[in-house]
Image 1: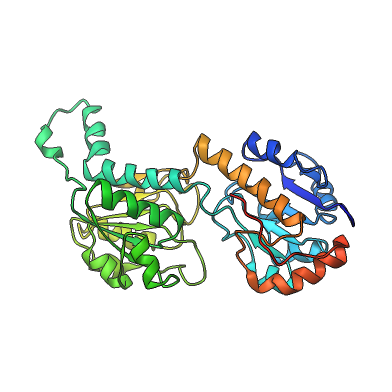
Image 2: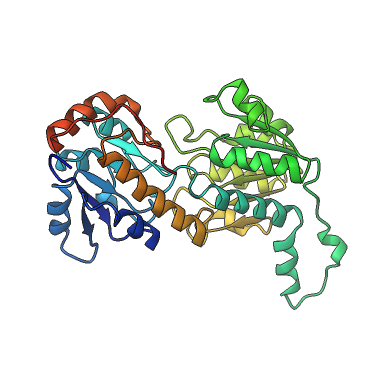
Length: 356
């Protein structure tokens, strides 16, 4: 390969050996492991010379090494930064775009894992599996099994906020397996997309007003931050269940706690919080009808391997001079092309390589 050998810095490790295996087949990429157990100055010196930067998940990436405006300014050779999974809310996308730095993610790599987590929460809460498990473990026997009679998913209405890789798969399973009626709010897709993705397009209020289950499956962005507040919970049926496996900050946690306390919402499943992990005295942790998990919906052996492999293969695509398939900020492309040619000494192709 002509030109400069690109340098890819990755934070601490790949999520799975599949990443190492995939990237090892690209001898024209110089790999730089940024260890977190060494002097911070050494990490910055290595990062400042890198052309690509692969981060860890947001909960494991130290604040100073998140792709902020300050980091972009300190690393003048950076051409692209990559999220380990689908979420990129810790990235300053505007700063990257201004600097001609591409932002990519691995959207879809952990979709099956997240979908199955949502289904698990829907079933656990509606069937009162967690509640009855807790009751059985107590010495008091002042309950009967009929007190934990749950409800089925069959023919209920599911409202999905965000009909992307996760939302569409959730819609497909719920509509076919459980004969659920699926409605969705997603202002970024077309009417034909809704049809292909097994859902009917509605506005956000209708999602909350008509659904028996509401599932948040959109990213945290300027548009979605604080999108679900007290007014939305007021619209919900008192028998409805709210689930968020997207990102903390999309829904108002105190408003949800208030709705649960007043019986305006029947239960909640939360994999994400604004501050993770939440404090032990967080009000939402006091409810038996709230099932929580530590931002693990997308973490399985299978999804970790997918995320690492997809990331490695996308880097191979990028440094081969092709347009990456999971590009978040296409507005940066023109300036990126010029910088790529200046820094690496070879042209960029307009074609996008096909990879996972």
